[in-house]
Length: 375
Image (cartoon, rainbow, N blue to C red; front, top):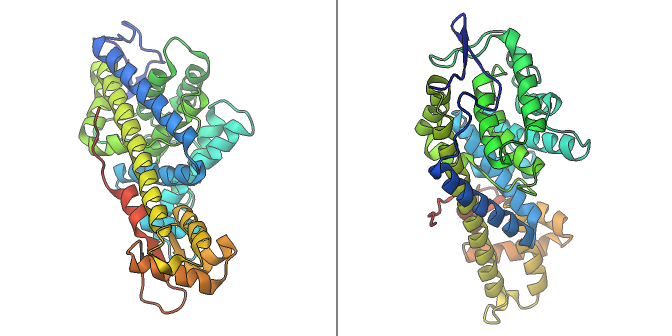
């Protein structure tokens, strides 16, 4: 059995990457999954490049990953709550919703440091992301700092705090200097190593999954964060944790990498399918608006298309918000939204007569519903 680390005072200290004695075996199953994951990752990246409005898709997909990654850690909120708070800021935010918004901010900050400051993925990036992730949680989780005390995760005791800085330094070196393995597989190894080090008091799972996206973008596998691998990890959460544990207990890097590559493959297919379904739905809605038999749109057809596009960007909204965003009069927007409600495209989320909030239901359902995966 491969030696993956040493025990010290009951805690486990992992060996530096890459795996050795023996090295990672790229067996037939891994090579097959690597080819499939690579193909579908490239396909998803091409879909993203061809989207007419990449920004709104990226925003929606980042929110979806934030939700799914948080749900794995027992943090539950809804897509509607996140969109509501993200778009108007006047909603009474629950702790769970704020934590999901924090994840979105953490990804944004990490991207900025990598792109604008031209930093590699180093501790400064990871710590900044953690600080944003844990904002509002107080000092008990030491936001933006590696832990300075021992922790226990179930029956597993991660490395002592005194080892964390050195272990993260080794991991940083591996991320930025070791090129023995393809970036896709390397990101999977980094994730399991990060989770084993468990460098923070809280937020390790979410930062570890965020690292996968950052490494894909840093290595050129993805141009934008339009992938949500937590889709698969959440659906198979028991196996996810089992595979991570078996790396430490059995040296089974191969089992983890096979599971991880399956997660990337299926997540890419799902994300690509979802983008295509959303685009098809948008085309259907535009065709309906252009139908001359729908006389309610005859004099405001162009404005109606502008409003429809705005709803895809702001799917939880008030009429005043859309009026400001489009530069159109309140009464015109009110008329269009009323017609959309009659068509059941939008529904009111409350019974208020003034400043009523609506949701773009046909779009939100496409973001929320599970899609079938066909290889």
